[in-house]
Length: 503
Image 1 (cartoon, rainbow, N blue to C red):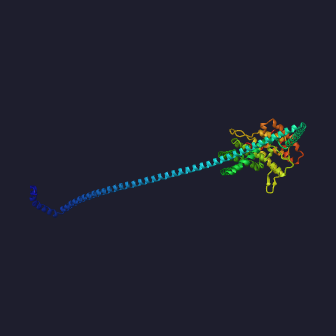
Image 2 (cartoon, helix red, strand yellow; image 1 turned 90 degrees about the vertical axis):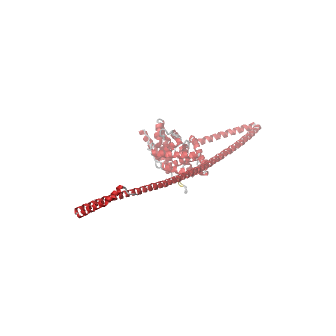
Image 3 (cartoon, rainbow, N blue to C red; image 1 turned 180 degrees about the vertical axis):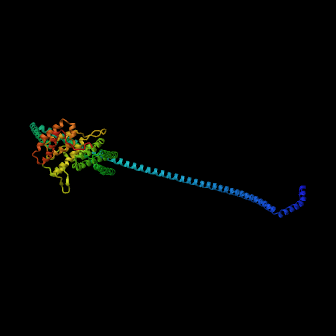
């Protein structure tokens, strides 16, 4: 490209200017002040250029740093997203594993529940089959008995028919023989009637005939337990296991019984629960556990009440409260008491001289001190033993359940009946001790129920009944104690009572 006119002009002027500048520079260098000025100007110019270079370098470094930071931030975000994605994947996998585990647990639970249901149904089916079998066997046994009775009845009818025919045949032979026979039969009837009357008079001096008749149902109940309930339990494995388990619980509870309301209520409720559980399982097991409980209560009285009569009260409270909830329980308890203490009927076993002493003691309720050696308890021990059982029986008849718990199914009227019956039988050496034990437990309740009749009976006992034992040396101590007890009542108007009837 050709240079412009201005450029040409500049170039033309440059030699002159250059010479001029050269001269000026020379002048300046020759002048020290000027030289310093020039150096300062160059230094300022260099410093400005250096500052500019630093600034540009710093800006460049900043830009590069920002670029690196942007790249680093982008890398961080990329890594974060990657980590979050991996974490989310792990969470999803763990959730899936948990879901599968829960599904497996639910499946296992359903299988176990199905197994339990099957086992339960199998047990119920087996139990129903067993019950049906027992019922069937019982029906067959009853039918067999019925057929045998009908057969026997038919045979008896046939025998009577033959006898009638024989009588008619004999009657046709001779009227004289008939009259003689009738007279002979009449004499035999009269003789038999006299024997029966003599036997009745003899028995009335050793027992209450009415009391023995009433005791018949209790003897039948004991026979039922021995011949039906006990064998049925022994033959049924499940019932037997349930019986043994419940037996241990009840034995322990009765042993812990004390005369405190909370303890009595707790043990009563626990026993009621056991009764109800057994009843739901089987009526046979239900009757068995009630019978065992009755036996345990009587055994506790034989060991504890004999020593401390006041312990009869908590035993009576439990008995009565259970009887208000379980209708048959009271009859079982009374049956067990009568078995161990015949004086509750009342009955004495000194009416048969042909009976052996061991047999008589067994009927009277004696216990062995040493069974292997056949050593019976002595007369004093026996008297205390019987008094303890009478104390429990008296505690039962005088017990009044708490409000709302129903009525005592064996109330105080039985106490009045017993006192009247025993006073209508000639007393024995043990009789004053029995009456004393009864009055010390149930006397206050008897007096409150029979305020006019009882004082007359007590006066009769003191003035007419006890004197009948005046010649009996074995009865002196017991008769003296009862006489003193009744004399205290006659002077004070209050019957001495053993504390504890109200917890």
